[in-house]
Image 1 (cartoon, rainbow, N blue to C red):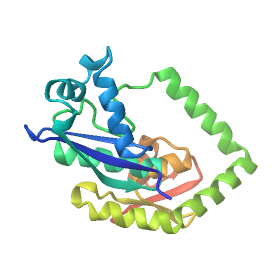
Image 2 (image 1 turned 30 degrees about the vertical axis):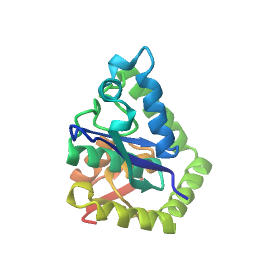
Image 3 (image 1 turned 90 degrees about the vertical axis):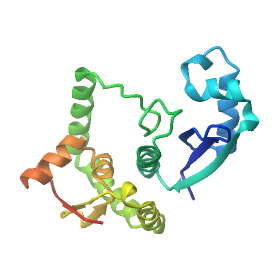
Image 4 (image 1 turned 90 degrees about the horizontal axis):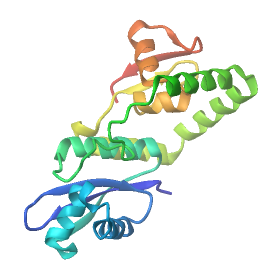
Length: 206
């Protein structure tokens, strides 16, 4: 079962585009864009302004990529935006993040919460089993093949965890599944040390 879809909106008059992601049917998400264009906040968004200027019938809406989890959806959206450089996007993609950096206090609190969770043997065992199950599903295998099919712009190096005998599609997925920061994963790989004193991580070409 798919998790979400990356979709493309193209202005048939100017060729300008917008790339987005949604867990809804993509045409339902397009309807939400139209409603936004009719609202008081329309001026904040390039796409909404374009819909007002040209009319909703001036746009072609297409589904581009179906993902099986949140990480795959974010990676695909980010890479497609990077490849197409759509005029109407105001963010680089990945769940609509607009470059907002979390506070130092927030990062510290998250780190401490994860540290306490991983210190719990029962919680850690459950997470390890969940990771093994998720990464070995047919959907995960198909997702990896589909991302590769997007071309070099959508490819990422895999991260292998020696202790779990598991490969993750990217540093981002390894960080999410293991409860680590992206920097922590990169540091462990670069310096050949165990992340959180538990995981030996290696980066390999997919």
